[in-house]
Image 1 (cartoon, rainbow, N blue to C red):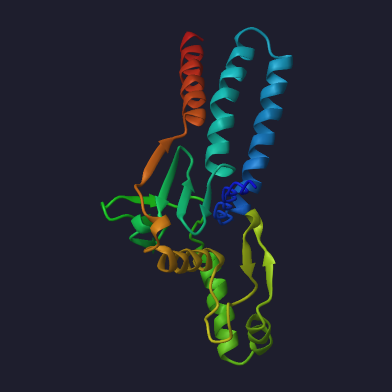
Image 2 (cartoon, rainbow, N blue to C red; image 1 turned 30 degrees about the vertical axis):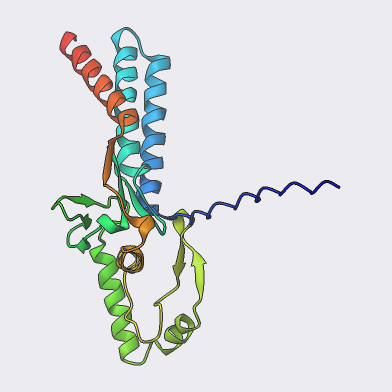
Length: 233
C-alpha cells in the first residue's frame, strides 16, 4: 500500500497593495487643456497655410510649447498610499516612503520636507488664499449659528469622489472640526496618513528622484530649434 505523497502547500496570495489616492488640480487641468487646444489650433494652422520658414518655426514652437504647457498644468499630481508618497512635478518624479517624510509645510506653496533638509513642492496641491478666505467666512457663519445644517451633514460623514479619483469629505470632517479650504484638507489627509504609517516596515526606504526626460528633451530640442530658426531669420 503506497502512502500518498504530501501535498506542497498552496502559494499564499501576496499582500494586496493599497490603492493610490490621487490629488490633482482641476483648475490647472482645465486651463492646460484650453491652452493646449489654442496652441495646437494656431500651430496646425501655421503648418497648413504657412510658407517657407514659417512652417518650420511653427513646428519648433509646437515641440517646445506643448510639452511645456502640459508639464505645468496637466502633468502635476500627488499619489499617496499606505507605503509611500509619489510626487509628480513638471520635470521630476519624487518617491518618498512615509518613513522618510519629516513634515508637510504650507505657506505660499505646499511642500514636503525630508530629514536630509531637502524640500519638494506639491505642484498639484496649490495654496489658495481665496479658498482659505471662503472657508474662514463659512466657519464664521457656522460659529454664529448659520452653519448648523452643514455641521449636521458633515457629522453624518457625507462624502463624494473628488477630482482625480480621491474621496473627499463634503464640508467639514465633523461638527467639531473647523471648515478648511480644499488644499488644506488634502494636506491634513497626508499628515494623518504619514503619522499612521511612518513606522511601518513597508514604509521604509530611500527617497528617489527621477527627471522626466520625456518632457525635458522635447522642450530643449524645441527651444534650440526655435532659437536657430529665429536667428537665421
